[in-house]
View 1 (cartoon, rainbow, N blue to C red):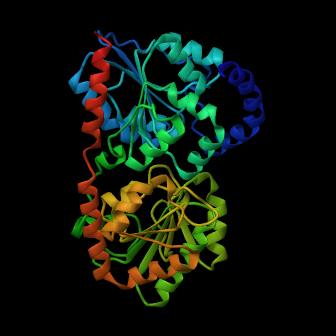
View 2 (view 1 turned 90 degrees about the horizontal axis):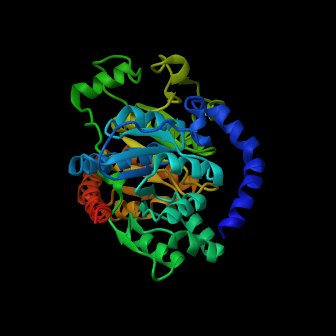
View 3 (view 1 turned 180 degrees about the vertical axis):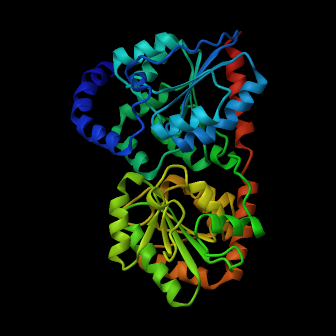
Length: 436
């Protein structure tokens, strides 16, 4: 199986190269440490007497989720050498800025035989962690060849990934059986992983690590007013604050739905502002055209800084805005959830801040979280764009209901924490075996 993959990888890489180069140029930020990806990362110079742990976290969400795990591992065993790799430039930047307890932050290498082998020879890990769904055949083969345990943590399978693995037959079983252990984010994901990997697949459940991420406190009272004023979302510090509707990680087509819902809110004489944060900031021009085609003038953060006076729609199109504006919001729509999109963006940050939320029918990436939110009455799932607009308007008109949803959301978040401690206990037990 591995030789088939090794022969196929260069062909697929060359076919996909124009697309990935184009996306890289649009997004930017990949110039620094470019050669990490081709097998030339720096060597971690820190001398420690314990095992070397290599952790792969794809992007920002995974880096934030694994931060607390790294911190607890370091406190429990200061002698561990910890290497953290990421795939995206935003994940790399965040890891370097936020996680100081690792010995090295680098980019994950291409999963091509000579490249992967070179990095493995350089890092010489004793234990590997992969976040969520990062299964790379060559990476797993290099681990197996060296008898290095590999654990998939916070593991989940979206509907789309589940269908793909079911169709892959022996390939899926081969990948999952290459793992020493799988720690799933929910019982439903664990069942799916067993179905794909077979009954002997070593699966346990810890809960979703992203629920244990520490969020900065939510501004209230005068502090919240000051933040609105600073961002140009109200004209005067003494003004009554407008209702802030947030489009959280929107995808194409969803901005139009938000604009139409926002127009209806304004027609009901509700003072309001709409902040849109697209999932891909490099598509800002497409988002701007969508907003303007609905008859609105807008202000863009990358050009104007704070929202320009007289503009009721604010496009936050620079990196790292989501958490901040989520903390200020009164009501949120969660993106990538309306047809034709599927999978959904995370509802967890809105849940942690107690923000009433609405999303479409396609939230398969966060099934367990959404089910919990809906059962608590903290979120509304809609079937169509029209239903979405009606739900947003109804919540905008009903402050009492928004307050009930806020309390339910905070209760849901509090009740579902604790996954970091459960996962760290599993990992420490496995790491201790390395010294035996």
